[in-house]
Length: 402
Image (cartoon, rainbow, N blue to C red; front, side, top):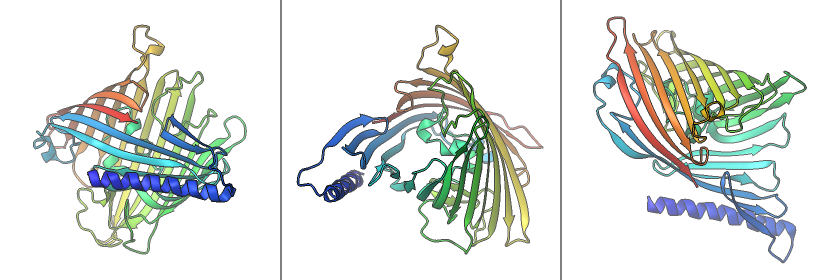
């Protein structure tokens, strides 16, 4: 770990000095240009005097205690074999971003130290609001819950839907932007083409690519972005409705930060075996400390190696949070209460339904940059034959960035 950390630091500062040298050559001056060093919302900042170069470095640690287990139950056996309380460093990240040559030519990469994974690396051309271009690897904007950083969640982690419906990180190219005129004529869009084999993949398993599109209606004239808490305390309601779709053919039926994987019931893997078609309908709202978000998913999996057998998975979640000091005088200002209900139905693949109900309290020392979270969850596994006894889980987490 020590050697890996040292290499990461060397790489970061090597890149910084490369930008510094490029800027010095470009200005053709004998004197060293003035650089501003600051600490902001994205960590330590090194900015050139003409603002054509910016380097931001940030680290993040996430400490978690969970009992009786930290994992979401997936199968019937998980309700009986997860008596393993754990304290762990759940995430340890290095983040580097900024811009080079021009303020609209941006870059970002993120590295997970604990698992030695390069998570994100991308370059963005964002010169105009209505048309931008992104190249590299990142979390596709298919799902609001997944796109929001793990450090920006209202609950300790994402819902039971995430494992089954996330498109996660992919490598490719994307166009995106915001189109707005007046009033409710305000839309954001994303359209991308990806290899479709997940994070870290260097090859495609067949000739097919992943195609993705998202259209978001900012019908109250405010693009909420991918965030979960109303820290701004909106005096006027801000809300969005979005629809997103993705289609892909590969040997995988699910994705995660580890890359491509398989869902229960799809253990057979051959190149190009599965065509997955996914649709997500999403809503979000923020108003006077109240925040709301929801997703409704459907996922069709076509097995081209077994007579085009088709199965459909469905699920949804509803989530809300409230900075209750807005209406309760004695409520501490840094304290938020949040709740989520999620329902997953894979009945065409497996004969059960899974439900999650979670309640959390967050104490924001410095918004999401330094927060303490406590969460209690109940999982209900139901089959036509029996209603399995519910399972409870308790988690405490400290997430800090510096």
